[in-house]
Length: 453
Image 1 (cartoon, helix red, strand yellow):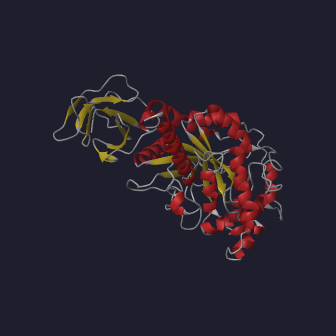
Image 2 (spheres, helix red, strand yellow):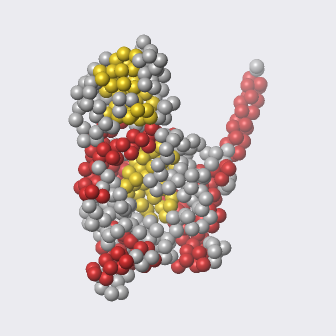
Image 3 (spheres, rainbow, N blue to C red):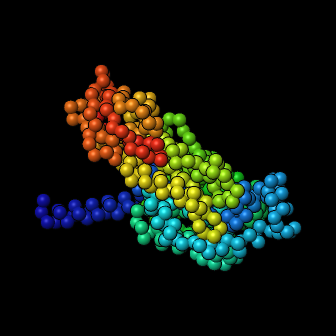
């Protein structure tokens, strides 16, 4: 081929690539949006931290739904709490100045997140109460810059997290607001009007993305109206096509009635979603250290908190079934993460330092679990299979029945330097000799199997 032929070929390829680039845009419909591949970082991350923090952290009673239970449902416990502790006529808005965050240190939070072994965070930019943790122009005097701490909490935390580089910054955001007049008016019209969407929600979401460039948006508060009311597909098309985070952004499935477990990026399906078999779509389980609330409660009891072995078991099960695990904590109104939550996070990090290769960047294996000597959960990479067991067998002989060994099989216990002695069973499986298991508060150990099928 002569020079002219090469030139024409290159021009043709360039034109083809340019056309492909133009046509590879996502259109504002679910068929197109759902075809977008999930950015790889999310599946590789496996473990994240959820942080619920807002005006509800000031009364810190019951749950983060305090305002609704008090003045929406008028739940007796909440009405009684207010009657006993606050003057007659006290409004929810009067709690906001108490969100002082006088001990909030974004760098300290980021250090705790990093030490926990988490690879992403989802921080509450706005919960259903409508209070924004940044200076939203559409939330006048009901945001953290104009009221409460008088600080841009979202901005400070974003900067601190990004300095660490190992943690991806994400934001939780509620679509609806319990008592916003525009939303209530739209609701009264059976959502035939969209005044709340045009004047509040969409300006706010675009501002959040362009100002802080989150890599994850954990949407919520969608269930009262269809996605057509929320303008969800239009927003997501912009997010995937033209936003400053279009190549890295990950979203969940809470974008309107009927979207759960059906549309979006990864699936939450429901709070604390717990499938019993391997889902076909990437999913996430969100759970809370405080089993009674996502927000901070001053009256929480130790017996109501997840202990470390329970958390690790939940994490291991979730990852074995192809999910990500998002564990929630609720800081206090002064901006401090309660020490009991810090302790849980630090101990998770300690376990992951030894056993993280069985979690991060793994894939579900051909078999997810089996009852060997004790129950185990399997994960895998291209070069190894990992069997995590959550019960000390209290014996040296340990059997696995599913792995198929070969002459190249190597068996190790993570955290122990020497390979384990093993022998094959009949058609498949192996028996190995365990050393004395190292003591761990997590009560979980991992066997690494190389050269097995």
